[in-house]
Image (tube, rainbow, N blue to C red; front, side, top):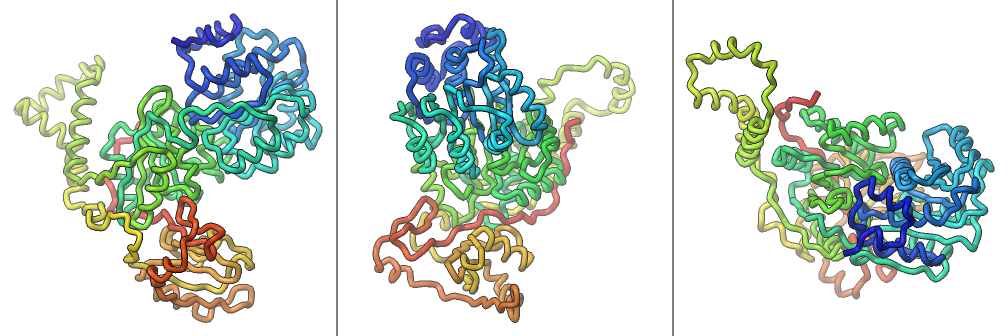
Length: 581
């Protein structure tokens, strides 16, 4: 059996391993650590989030740097402040017996002067976010011209966040003869570009298969009507009384809305997105780690770098725009050998995207039914019974026991149990007794290539890319102008000088009335209903390449439509839960 003792680590690092309780190295650690210790090669390691990548590059770097030197020898770039601090803290624990070790974190939202002072004291290793690092280099507050090791951690996430140019700029200030270690969960083309440009014949380590999902995570999807996402989310939460989940939305606005509605309905929820101050983010994350928040609603960018133990569920309230992002989302659960569940809530128009994700992660989704109200009542009742059975008796209750006994002196044991449990059961029963079935009928769940019965209207509008719009900006413009919800405008397809979009048929009069005699910057905006195309004729034009979400490639006549993901639920108000104090 492989142990840390067989990897070639020095005694003081093995002592830190022992103190941390590590016993068996993970696969990425087994493959990476010996190679990085013995050789001075560049390395590309592809492994899922939560597989122990920090130790895989952290221990070799700590063993190879000169602790007695005050020169910066190692640079680690990470996508978010949270991950930056996490890596810094872990390196300090790994190097607790490295006398004189100085690991400094550099990130936005904190005093740049204080960070510069820490670097000046002699930081052998700097862990940084790209934006703040680039800023400090431009101010000449940090010198990375003599580093021996550069690590790009969660490289795909950094590039997804738009740090491509920042990374190139930062690496241009480093020496050519350094070793570069790139760790990533997926290998999109941008990561390959970085590897080709800044690395020399790198060794490649792949844990599992590229872009494949974690083996400890199961995947389910629930198909509901376009307006039933939020009621479906509530039912899934109620059907899992011990849920500890991250709920992913695509936009900051949707994240805040969903979190507010959950809190309003009595759930222990919180939001995490880019509009929060750093102090607010810290408070939310502290509450989530302490499990005072059971459902954290987050955007993909804000959630990057979250490393919280025992997350039971990842819920995709909306699917991400890029399918690779799904791998990162699902990787938040099923860590450290534990199992987890990734749930997707979709509408009928998004079925094909499930098939695409299945191909990428090489795992099958299980189609499940949103539980009905009676089943939820049963689940909640049993959960309460187990909770009461497992509760330790508080001796202080003896002071009030005689009065309580007197109150129930004429009540039988069976009646008392019924009364007690009815307090909780009745709340759920009254709410769910006449609740509708949220599941799309079985006959509508086929992955039909020719299904065109989406009950929507398609519109032409005479503005496009030349007017400064991409598909998301166009969607936001239409939604805000018409006063609709995020998911009420979908299948937005932006061309150079015109665009197409869909709404439900019920909104057709509103759309046409609003854009009748409407001007934008002094120019009349023309919106018309388009006829649905004959798909059989369209297929005869020749095969076209598509990406994972149905977007045409260069051989097509432009991009096809995208499907929106968000619509607010409109169910009745839910009985409020007893909140944790």
